[in-house]
Image 1 (cartoon, rainbow, N blue to C red):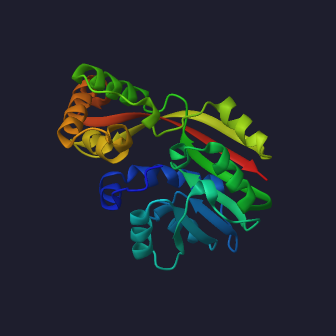
Image 2 (spheres, one colour):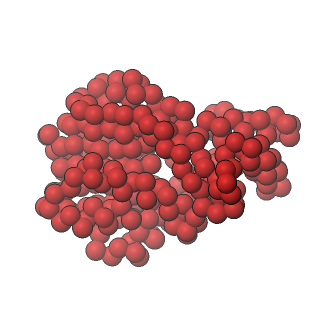
Length: 251
């Protein structure tokens, strides 16, 4: 998972991450007094909304810059730098909530096991992550740009996990969860401004580009934008091809 996020860029250009997560809070249905863990809390917007229910929220994220910004924005909520693959909590939470974070985890088995351990018996796991088909056109355009420019594309640097429904249900089942609801749905997502795809690539594809020089990175990003202009740029707006997997499971 990317642990060197630009928290300011995230807050100013990628508000859609939190915006689309608001519906997931209704799905969580937090209650006053509940202990809730927000895994991959980013800069804290959704944790703050959950806390408005009267629930006691803790937010964790692997990015120190995200946690620093969250702590400044919402001083009444405890935020900690932690790896979701090794949370270190045991039978502590009534619910674990996660929006747009779990698809960054390299070891899904460790993340699921750690979340299961953090929950009380009967506790619920409510999450949304990228699912099968998510950003497929963006990934293909990046790969095409690498080929055309003659740069080495390192598949092992691919940072995401986008499971099918069957794959994720099987994973949760393997670690003891009871899955009550799961859905894979199309979520065309508007990126902010004329430079929407450039900002997206700068923010989220760094691990794919990290072995390149700064000039080479710029060339790949520019070429990728050119390829995507014909498919994702509509009526003056960038629309990313997001597919989301939403799940409710209990311990």
